Each structure stands twice: as C-alpha cells, then as structure tokens.
Image (cartoon, rainbow, N blue to C red; front, top):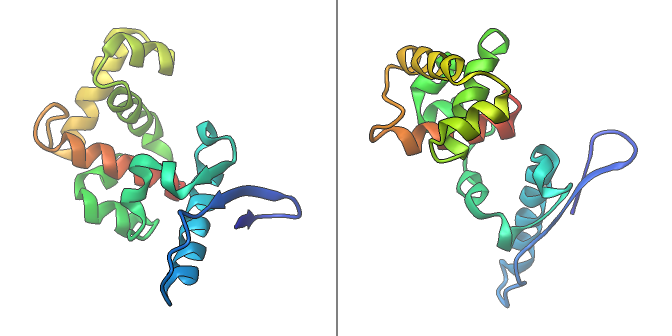
Amino acid sequence: MAVRQGTPIEAAGLSGPLRDTADGLPTAIREAGFAARVAARVPELGRQACWKTLGEYRLFYTYEWSPDGVAAIDPGVARILGQERAPLARTVLTYLDRQGDVNAAAAAVNVHRTTLYYRLNQAAGLMGQDLNGPARFRIHAALRLARLAGL
C-alpha cells in the first residue's frame, strides 16, 4: 500500500502475513495502509514500514489521529501542543524517547541542561503531571500520537 500526497509516492507499507480467513485480505489492506501512514510521518522509518515491525506505533492503530485521539490517551498533553508551545512538546518527547537521559536529550534539542530542565518543569506544570511519575507512559504515548497526527 502506498500513501500519496502529491504525484510521487510519499511512503509504502506492508501488511503482516495474509491469513486464511474471509477477513484476511481486508485486514492485510488496513495493516498495510496504517504502516504506510506511519512511515509517511516518521522519518526514521525511511518512508517504508512493515506492520510486523512497527513496534510501539501499532498501539495507535485504533486511535483517531487528532487532538481527540491524543486527549483519549492523556488529556494534559493537549496543553503543550500547538505552535506556541511546540518547543515544550518536542523537548518532552525527546527526553522520554531517550529514557530520561538529560544529557542526551539536551544535546538532541540543542539546548543547555538548565534550559532542558526549565522546559521539562514548565511542561509538567502545564500538563499537571510529573514526567517521572505513573503518567510517564501515557504522556509519552500521547506525544507519539500527536507526532503522527502532525499536531
């Protein structure tokens, strides 16, 4: 399956193995379409993805790629999304993607550690949640979905 935005193909996706059921082909088409949509939004995948190797992105198969989908995972994340707060969301996602490694996150977003801590504290305050508490997984998942949705 391919995703087309303009004339050239933007991304390609492959389904998992075709099952021998009446539902097999439609399921394979949905899986391939989803994999292509993810590949179009995640540059690290190299514009192609396979359902079987999508990893954590498969969690978002049933979620709407919208602010409502993000809010369904964690309502507080919506408060750090948007143009004016994009650096906060990007900083938190980078920090969580690097398992809380402050040095690696600061280098990745090209800021001093003090600035990183400031942004993390600011984001946590806006979301009303501790980034190192039980909400950590929900925040990370909601930010990943927001990235897929282009929010």
